[in-house]
Amino acid sequence: MKLEGALLLNADLTQGWLDFATLARCSMDEATFDGASLTDVDMTKSVADQASFAGARLARAKLAQVRFTSAVLTGADLGSTNLEGADLTNARLEDAILSLAICRNAKLGGADLTGATLHQTDLAGADLTGARLERVDRSTANFEGAKLDAVNR
Image 1 (spheres, one colour):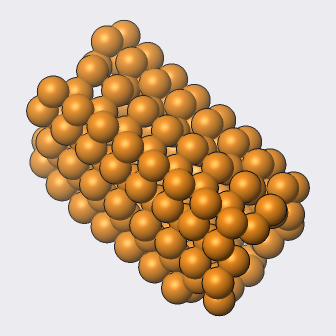
Image 2 (tube, rainbow, N blue to C red):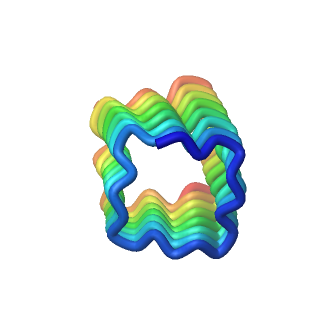
């Protein structure tokens, strides 16, 4: 399904099936994708401020340079996802799975990653200023050059 550049403002796609869809450069502010299947989706350069992806499956998604400020991704599966250069400022990522995700140079300032899985997550150069990393095993994640000022561990 190709929806490139679509306006999905306030759309309700709860439990939707959008695997392999092209949603690049879409406007999705305040949209709801709770429990949706978005595996292998391409959302490159999309904007979804204050959108909700709670419990959504976004494994292997292309999310490079997305803007998900204040988005809800609680319990979302973002395993093996490309989030390079993404803006997740103040996003809620509690209990999210970010194993093998590429988050190089991502903006995660103020994000809540409490209980998130960061197994071999690449956070090189990421800005995690003021982020919450409680109950997070960071032992295999790459934080080379990441900003960790005022991180709540």
